[in-house]
Amino acid sequence: MGTYFEIDKLELLKAQFDTAEFDAEANEPAIYIGKEQLLDLMKVLRETPTYSFDRMSCLTAVDYKEYFEMVYCLYSRRFDKWVTVKVKLDHDNPEVESMTQIWEGTNFEERETYDLMGIKFLHHPDLRRILMPDNYDGHPLQKDFVPLEPRIEGGVLTWHKQKSSS
Image 1 (cartoon, rainbow, N blue to C red):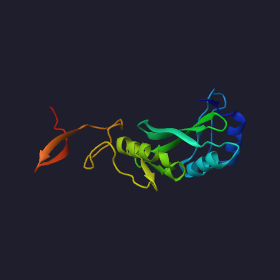
Image 2 (cartoon, one colour; image 1 turned 45 degrees about the horizontal axis):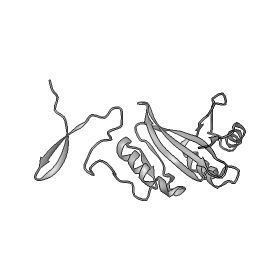
Image 3 (cartoon, one colour; image 1 turned 135 degrees about the horizontal axis):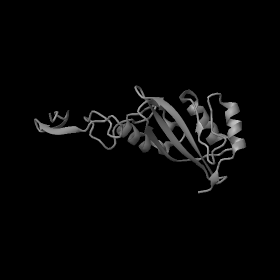
Image 4 (cartoon, rainbow, N blue to C red; image 1 turned 30 degrees about the vertical axis):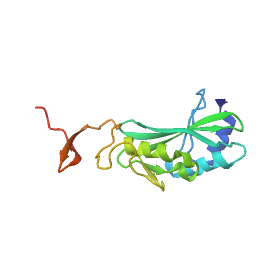
């Protein structure tokens, strides 16, 4: 993969989006954006010829207990550049716009993030579990997750909170 996005172009984005921030001292500064401006920023990064970030190479989420952080890694094949975009989400109600509106290929990664972290992607075309059973209550990669105990009840696999060992 190529080199990181230039600071002067990050400055242009910061001027265009009032919630955009980045650490100018960092070697590879991530763009932090408010969730209400995320979709517009991503459209600009993809559709503006100056940027041309035509590929979402990955997306993931981090649980910091107080909040979640969505992390998006973008790549421009035209300029051989990459950039990281981050957005903080409320821990009690983590939701953000789906990037499938811009990059259809994010479908499965968003479903995986929803399934394992509990992040809801608004306007996703098919937001449902992808790894855990449909009747599983919880999201295994959240820091406060307590594993559930499987039981067969009436021929159906069900999930229950584990009994206390005390």
